[in-house]
Image (cartoon, rainbow, N blue to C red; front, side, top):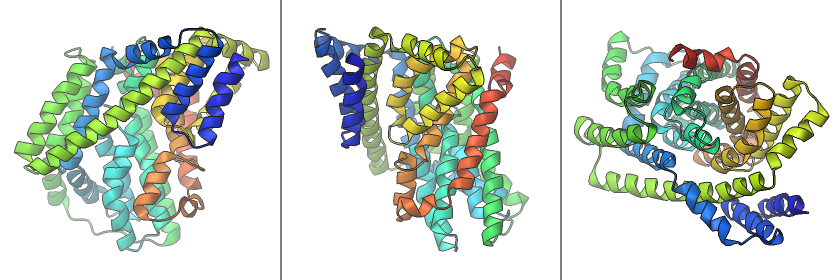
Length: 426
């Protein structure tokens, strides 16, 4: 009966449109009361989850992304990308993929990526005769690269949800090759679709312009090296690297780029505080929900249930991926990671999947869910920027969706794609 209350009430509230965090909290409290446990334990668990030192890196990295976005870095990334790939067929689509990949190494967030890059590139593509659905589909699928490259907030969250047993530096390294594969796959897809629709290419500005724009973007690009290199070398922790990133971003945008006005700085502070507050509240509610699932031995039950269905690791992974894709269509990524990690990570480990590889699988699966109909949040943001209904984008999103899914399958069934780089850096 407790399973019905927990998951049934959660599903009902979500179907009624109640925000995810409140749905998780209500389902948790109702189940705790049914189990005759003191309700105060729910709020104790919420407090213990959001006061974890490891999670302090998330609001700091969010603040870094806001500073870089308000400080003009996205414009420099787009300018650099345009000089590099703008001359390829459907050049603005190629620019969007490369620009998102570069900016993802600073923002660490798919929503921030689609907002920053899409806010500039979607109107530009429409202005130059590209169809609105193409502009949205390229932008939202390219934003998923940000989930896999340092300083991905979601990798930090996955590590915390796994009890801190998975190295953040290993996760950062594991996502690099899949991220590059995803970017390459999306560029090929964008080219094929652009050629079919007859989109033109931009003129190549020359190697001198490429070098000039690269120099202008280097201070921002160095942030990725500082974050990843410092953590990987053991110079500082993820939280320390996030603190350094905030200071570095402030100096770069204020003194080097000189693009950060006082008004923009206040907007960055406000945006970071608002986003961080929402994320941490979701984390607290999802953490209490996860604790209750552990108390009810849901992970153990799930392992036994799947073993009763099949002992084939391939089928098990496919079932997990299908579940994550479905849940990702209507749930935010943070609660989904916190809820699903304690359920599916033990299952994956029981069938011989490395926790680092599973982290990449989980993030990419949840990310694809964000651009999957009917409700994917990244799809919603991209469509809102383009001022078109989501249904308009869905008619032609499938080539990009299949490109993302192909990369997911490769990462799932070729472990070396995510594990080779971490093993090389040990």
